[in-house]
Length: 260
Ligand SMILES: [Fe+2]
Image 1 (cartoon, rainbow, N blue to C red):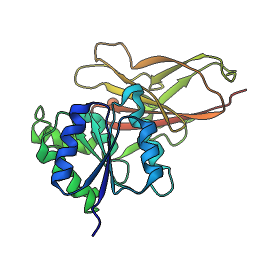
Image 2: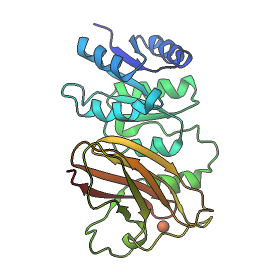
Image 3: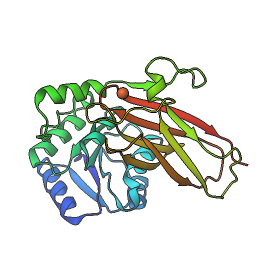
Image 4: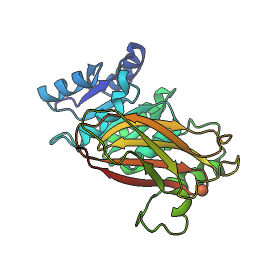
């Protein structure tokens, strides 16, 4: 029987070596790539059974690469393991099918458990991130609960209940011209969400279409969860913001931009 083939996309040679050594111990054939471009070239050459991607590829390409792979015919269903630096990102990845996450630094046993799970097609039961030592079990359970569902605004023109303080509000010029920079300001909450130690907005992610644009971490000392991002768009697109309230979970809102 042919050996199963794993593609490791990682710019750091030490991490590549660590992953390769452990995958070869599982009798996998290992192919390496150091960039998103090399990853796509390898996949064009022949099929793989598993892809391991570093989310922190130079240029922030790891996240966009995962989104692109998911949309690529013949590759979209492959199990993908993403190596991430932040535990919150690992939890977000669970929204995608067949994508598991390992928080760096991880041990060989975590990696092996994750790979075995992926190859067994048991991606719905990825091993729990046992290396999140900073949280108690109760805190971990509460965090898991927060990430179980994404709250989406039903009608942006008529916000209801918790939506009023958690919906991303998009502020941008009335006219956006192709190729010309403009400032996008995003505020969390039509009535801005409070920023206190026990209850605050932790972060937001901004996407333009499927392209990841920015990740912003907020400190509770800020007066409100608001950020301004310089953007250049070539064509009309949907802006999407996902954010986390530490008590009320993940919230998502979109805004259609017509580019002239
Ligand atoms: Fe909240």
